[in-house]
Length: 256
View 1 (spheres, rainbow, N blue to C red):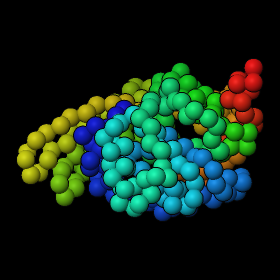
View 2 (cartoon, rainbow, N blue to C red):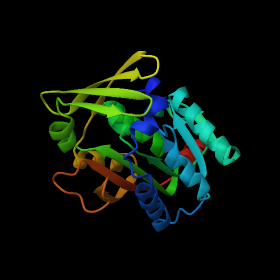
View 3 (cartoon, one colour):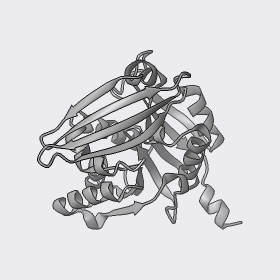
View 4 (cartoon, one colour):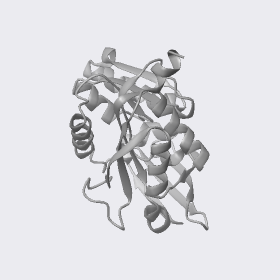
């Protein structure tokens, strides 16, 4: 999913997101596992609020997104903060991620990995992140839960209103409850122009995600509610996983 036209309204239409709480949790997890500096990649960074916060915290950030529109918004924000020289932005699909060297950590938030599926593609994306992770590296990512797909998104429609645009969001949940097809219609209030985008989200049970992590050399260290950051509940709408890489693959590959 590229979020093309949506990129310019992502921040104002995503205004309820608690970036401070997310940043606090992510940095606590990184630091708890000894990652206090070094290279950290934000996979599917979008417009980059978390990327910028981690850059300001002293991490050498790589922002990765396949949408040039999203990266353009992030680039403008970094320029305004005077930190663009400390931030590397890469337009890449995380299914074919190439970071040119190892990283100490990776984060991926706001459902990026839900948009990758189905399952073989999800597994490939986890494998690419694993390939560049140093031993002891920390991977923190969230996913919308099956509960959210089946009970909240379901076949519902939502209207998101911003000062410059109105976004109409329509869902269609598969009979199995493991995929939601989403259509977005954005109407610009000043010109009356209308843009439409379509994409899908896939959801996975936590045990399956743990299995995929382990198959790619990660050990699951923490699984929490991705909105409260407290214990996972039956009605949690988002998971957040913290996984630790058990060995370095890239150096082994280069060393034969």
